[in-house]
Image (tube, rainbow, N blue to C red; front, side, top):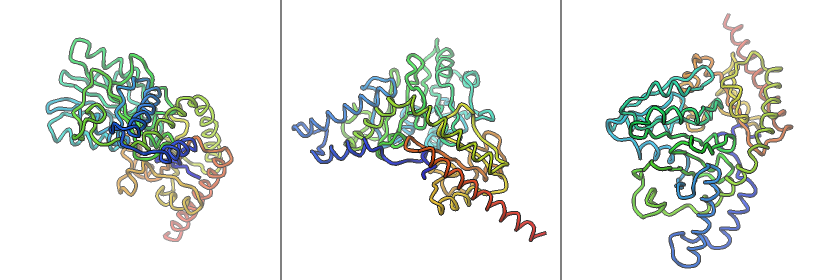
Length: 386
């Protein structure tokens, strides 16, 4: 079973059918003026409408990208200028943190806020960090490692109240993990810039979007043709965009039902783990993403557990796929106060809409067995060494 859904899952059946139908007809360039090109343009714009509806945005505000990483890079590097002050957090995705490193090298001043033990950053904390030179605040809506959801609406109000008599401070939210679980339509409290990724919702990999609301403007990362209203050059990935449109519509329509199912699945997963794999330490807020569980099993190493689980047919992770193989403990777990040993013993278990109660329960039982085996081997080694 896939307990690493936050890294990616299977394309939804409706997505596969829609893409197969598109490819079976005429996969033309949407910038072409002939009939096939116009049909491709219609397909792109229909998908844009669906992504906009999911984000609570206007279709004209949606810029298609190659994924969440490009959207985050564009939101930061397309806005930040030398001398600008930027506020973000210490638990952001690598695509945000590394973009901030580039912005810093180009002359920006960056402040990274420390979260509390649950991984939450408060609106007052953000407001206190603002300066006269602040031009951008970038906060991940939901953390893909520990599941904590940030109070984006309250942060937006705090940022805009602080900047009421000054040039607008733009708010960027990385909503890659939040989409499908959180209500993104916040009306007047919506972020100015919003990053999305298709494959987190059951679309194909390689497609995402950045919502750009006025007064935000971007210096494009990719230049060339006049695609995406001159905000992102390059021929649009029509099959990917078609898949994103279908997945966005399903995520919007099924969100409430998914939240109820996911909460029940998470409760069952935790019940099995707590009954069979104690002691354990949970990370993140209780009201976080229902399909995400971060838990440390003291006396084990999570990297070894991932291998043992894989041999038993269960996919799990120690953290985001982009950090796989990293020698250092998770920067997110460190930021919320975990020592290196506890961070090294942490598994991220995540599941998506295709998960069933039986699969989750069986997979949790396999985790229990692998943890017990790892602890017994460690105890035997310690006893032998003594």
